[in-house]
Length: 192
Figure 1: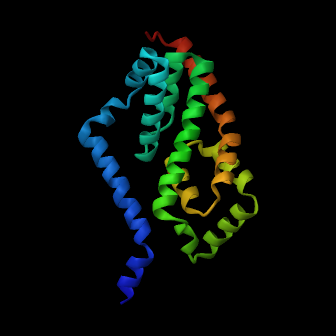
Figure 2: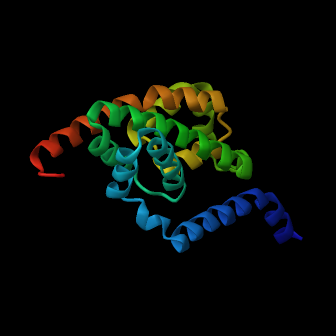
Figure 3: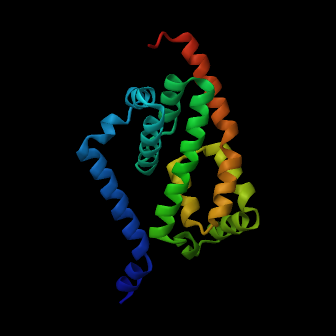
C-alpha cells in the first residue's frame, strides 16, 4: 500500500525521467549528439543565417535537455557570426531553450519540489516565492542556462512569467562576459 502511494505521488517525476531518458537515447542512437559540436553549429549558421539560426535554436534546446554545456553554442555562434551577432543569437536561443525546458519539465513534472517536506527546502522555496524574479535573475547570473537549474526552477512552482523575466534579466551579463572571453581567445588562436 505504501509503495503504491509513493509511486502515485511521484508518477509525474517518473514520467519526466523516462521521457528525458528517451530523448537522450534518441539523440545518442540517431548520431545527433556527435553533430552537436562547435564545427557543426558553425557550419549551420554560416550556410544560411535563417535556417541555420532555427537549427541552432533546436540543437540548443535539445542540448540543454540532455545536459550539454551552453558554451559550445556560444563558441559556435561567435565563430560563425562574430562576437556581437553571435552573442545576440545565443541570448535569443538561450531564452527559447529555457522556455522550452520550462514548458516540457513543468508539463511533465508539475511543481513536484513543493512536495518535499525538508525544512531547508521549504525555506529555499519560500525565498523563491517572496522574490521570484530577483531570485531567478541572480541564479542566471551565476549558473546561466545550466540544465539542472532549469529543471529545478521548472519543478519549483515558480510562475512562467517570473521565470522568463528573471531569465531575460539575468542572462545578458554572463553572456557578455563569455563573449568577451571567447573574443579574446579567438584573437590568440588561428581558427579558420
